[in-house]
Amino acid sequence: MLPAQHYPEPTVGALIFDPKGRLFLMQSHKWGDQYVVPGGHVELGETLEAALRREVAEETGLTIHDIRFVCTQEFIYDPAFWQPRHFIFFDFACRTETTDVRLNDEAEAYAWFTVDEALRLPMDAYTARAIRAHLAQQADKPQEQSAP
Image (cartoon, rainbow, N blue to C red; front, side):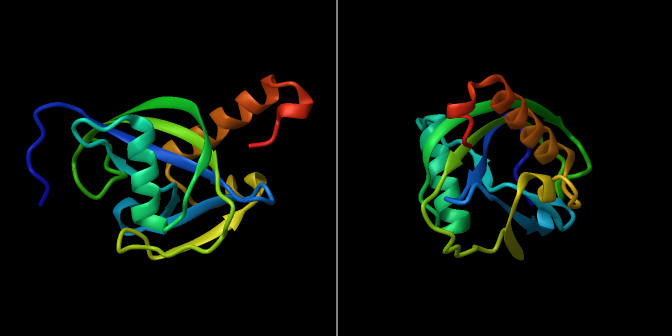
């Protein structure tokens, strides 16, 4: 059981794109076996970017780069998560050079999807919102800079 919260918990999430532009998603029992992005809490004294790199490495074994902020989201005791929690999500898009994933015990399966494929999967609403926010940002960029 998680300790009682006294304040909202800042967390990070990573939309990870491989060299082919595919998005990494994993299925997690913590989210009702839906597809989600890797991420987790920010430790005291840790920057958001450092937390993102650490959480991605812990959950997937991947190294990320080209980190760009996507959006914030509020998660207030939503039953989508396995425990009642209040989170503030800081979602980022980033890249990796490899698809060699080593999952930890927070996920049961993973795959790389095109964004169109990903949006048709059973996923939590927060992951879907982050993907759509990323797509909106990409649409606002000049064409030559629109890679994830």
